[in-house]
Image (tube, rainbow, N blue to C red; front, top):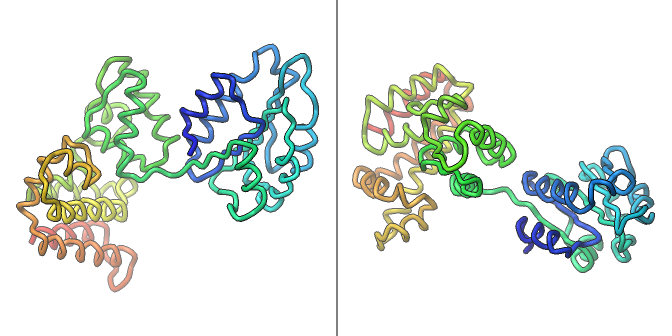
Amino acid sequence: MNTTNQLITDIKEGKIAPIYFLMGEESYYIDAISDYIESNVLAEEEKGFNQMVLYGKDVSVQDIVSNAKRYPMMAERQVIIVKEAQNLIKTIEQLVDYAKNPQPTTVLVFNYKYKTLDKRKALYKTLSKAAVVFESKKIYEDKIPSWIQSFLRSKQISITPKAALMLTEFLGNDLSKIANELNKLEIVVGAKKEITPEIIEENIGISKDYNNFELQKALGNLDHKKAYQIVHYFAQNSKQHPFVLTISILYLYFTKLMTLHTVRDRNPGTVAKALGVNPYFVNEYIAVSRNYPMKRISGVLQTLRTYDTKSKGVGANLSSKDLYNELIYNILK
């Protein structure tokens, strides 16, 4: 399986394929590879005559092939990038003949976002033999904090575990969106600095005290007062804190606590791997598990399912405030 770093390393070393078919749900890596090819394969003086950007909604497969078959002018190769190539989904199989015999002096790049080729059909099978096919998959949300840390490490910036979780909660698993916010924070903190919850609160507007991370911590510690304070804030700011997101995050949290009860080896590394969390939080999970034996967790998970249904208007028509208050009461009772 090709990785982004591997593809870029190959290009740097001059191992350039005639076709790059970049597809999948996660647009961040598709853009990263495509942008690198656009910026680096040709010298600046070669780009005027030999680099072209096409858009799938404006061209046909035949148009693309026709351009791909022409020869470069005063350069070793030409680069053609087809953006929004997913708009060609109904006709993309027409590319198969060209894929069988691509022009060796053309680098043809397809940005086929949010979709993938049918692996049973001829085009995918042909490209797999003669070109680079890269599938960019969505990263699960529990992997995002580690991705954030890795992204910042490459810029010589560190981030506290809590700050990484705050960003994950606020931004979800949209890597392009996350990278954009991290680049803004890089300007604020500079290299060899640490991003803290306070910096995120000041520059992105996420409250360091009133967020789902703090809510799950309050519930875990049976801190009634803090839990009600947080959900009161959520109810007053429901657009920034939708009930469905809180339910989802709490469900994941209590599912991890349930998993913890099945892990016999309490080595921090073993526990962290089993739960899919940063080792920094292992002791906290172990402490909280004493407040929530398996039977109680089963009840909490059922409560979360019940209030997820109620939030959709099934069997109840409660305000956001009432939903939150009833949820917390039933978890902590």
